[in-house]
Amino acid sequence: MKRRDFVRGMMFAGTLPVTLPAWASTPRIKFRELYVRGNTLTEKAKSLVGHDVEMLGYMAPPLKPEIDFFVLTKMPMSTCPFCESEAQWPDDLVVALSRQPVSIVRYTDPIKVKGRLEAGFKKDDATGFVSFVRLIDVTYEKI
Image (cartoon, rainbow, N blue to C red; front, side, top):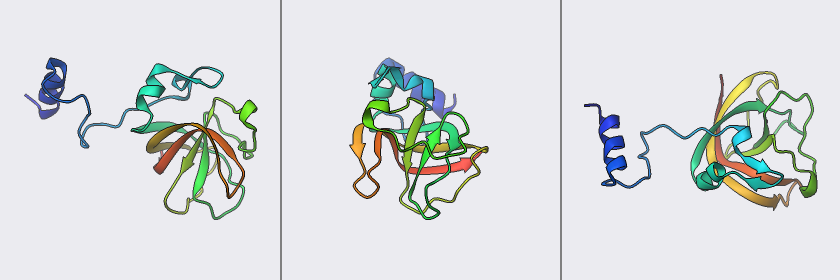
């Protein structure tokens, strides 16, 4: 029996906590799985808030070359879509915040992003930008 199958079996039987160990795969969430409608999160998204997740998408072009965040988009965008008000927040954008300077990836190249999911309107004091869904402490790679 494989270790993963054993752990999953124990979780199903209720003898292990539901929290997956660090070596288990990170749950993936798609843009379409974030919202029911408007600014209402799906049950899946609500259950993943505060946890590490993986998303696939595209890096929107940044406003300046030296940044520690980027906008993850569902589709490639040739301009930064991040200057929206709270009332207009698009459901196909996620702000990705890094602890390190971001190395820009061409906006047409798909990327895989991992980070802790946060939700709720938040205004960045330094830029004035508003976000509703964020990935914190991200890592990313071209796919």
